[in-house]
Amino acid sequence: MKGVVLVAVLAIALIGGCGTVLANPPLVPPVQYEQFCENQKVAGSGVVDVSTSIIDKKIALEYYNTMAGDGDLELDSENAYSQDPDKLKRNVSSVNGGNASGLNLYETTKMTYSGTTPLTGGKYLHSKAFYGGIGADVQEMYSVNEMEKDDTSFFASTTPYQPRDFRNVSPEKLIGKLKDAGRNTSQVEELMTADNGMYIPTHLIGIETKNSFNGTWGTDATWHKIFYKDIKAHEMFTGKFEAEKTIKFHENPVPDRIRAPCEGIDC
Picture 1 (cartoon, rainbow, N blue to C red):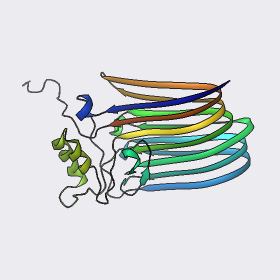
Picture 2 (cartoon, rainbow, N blue to C red):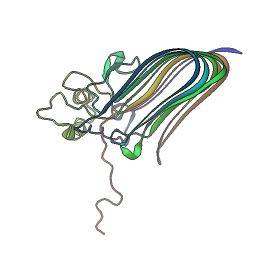
Picture 3 (cartoon, one colour):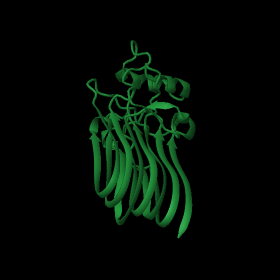
Picture 4 (cartoon, rainbow, N blue to C red):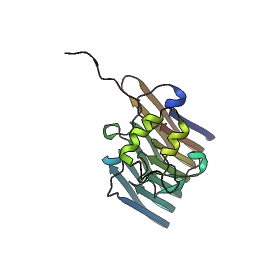
């Protein structure tokens, strides 16, 4: 069985363009920010067991990436994480017009695999609503005897660490400025630009992937907000396929005012 799959899934909640939503403000990065980077190139034949996980409640991030198999492997990958998005500058084709953006997480993998034992693995990326994220998640999973893949994962949830007008506007004060900017998207973009000129595309979560495989491969994406939003996208393919796919969730970082129940009632 052979096929070609070209898919693009884009879910965007923009206060200025798609109506009123209960948007979350961007999270404020800690003063004592933390970073992690792993870069590797591997080529060989034998047992494969690779896993990376990053959980950070301060920026509402949950990330897992695992794979295991026994066969011929070539791997070139990078995992980069920074609570200070101003310093993690990367180009993603579907973000900011392909120009460099400031991110909190960036992962890229180029890989080829062939073996009688399937290479089994997956990737999970979640913006946790309980800690101030937007509640969206994307997942990729596979079990393949042959695969060539080139994919990228990206995530942003914070304000700039040092806003462009940092002498007058701290990250803590930026939330109020964003609320005042409201539907003025140019002003919002200016506020979400760091002093080094790097635009921070908060709130953002997504993956881009191009791959060909013999086996089973699929993706799941969900975005749920109680009482008013439920987005689900699922795909699974078994056989010989080529696939190119983008999944991206984005929410405008301008906070809406949420009225409390019975507001204005003396009781």
